[in-house]
Image 1 (cartoon, rainbow, N blue to C red):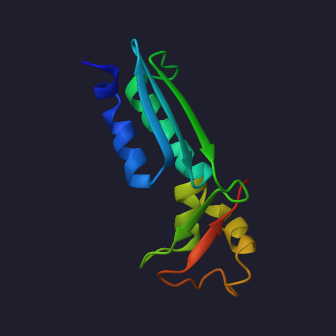
Image 2: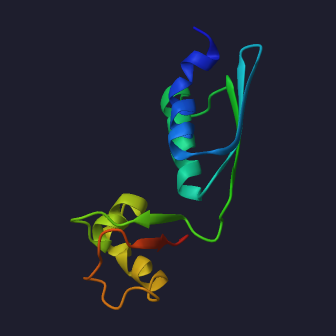
Length: 126
């Protein structure tokens, strides 16, 4: 199996996320991946996928993923049934961090218990 085939899941994820300026080359048995993610969260998703396939310290892939917007961790589009605590658990692993998300979005939110589908929330860097 070629190293590119091994990491096809990473390439597919990059496409789904809309990674910009993507460039993939194979040199010997090393896959070189380059591109720009919109946010740190998306960059982390790429790295998590690389580690899932290649292990904690893969030697057969080199990835240079930059981040377009470093001012935020991510921008989240609210879906029906979500709450700030559910969103905080998803991004930070801690539902109590909903307060940080609320604080970062007081320009559009006046109550942490009231969010609406299709609102775009800033998920702040912690």
